[in-house]
Length: 125
Image (cartoon, rainbow, N blue to C red; front, side):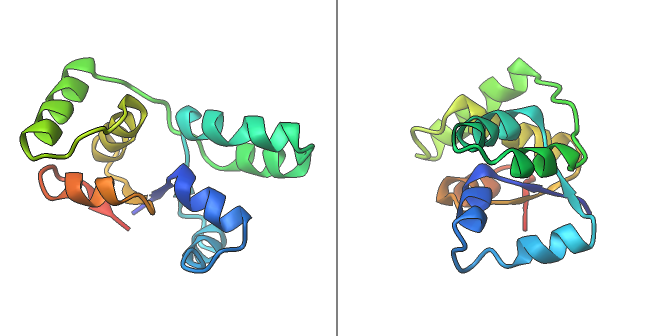
């Protein structure tokens, strides 16, 4: 199964933090995929820091197109609110939908994804 790596993991990996060592194995095994939302969150800071080589590497990761189903996003938000999972941003709901739609495992450090995964068929890495 391919793995969608969330921005929280990439930021930790770029900083050399512990707990995200699996990224290296995923890179080696060519199991990573990304999307334009994640790249839009990562690339601007890298460009400002003049880390063009990292930008080029991120752009080499296979990119799956986002097919946003807004009615699904609304249902996800309702599910979150009904279960007391508050303040989940639309970008994170889009990531959940993207992972579920494409049968991807989501690698994240953000706790709210684990909470959401209790109520929707989200596979967490």
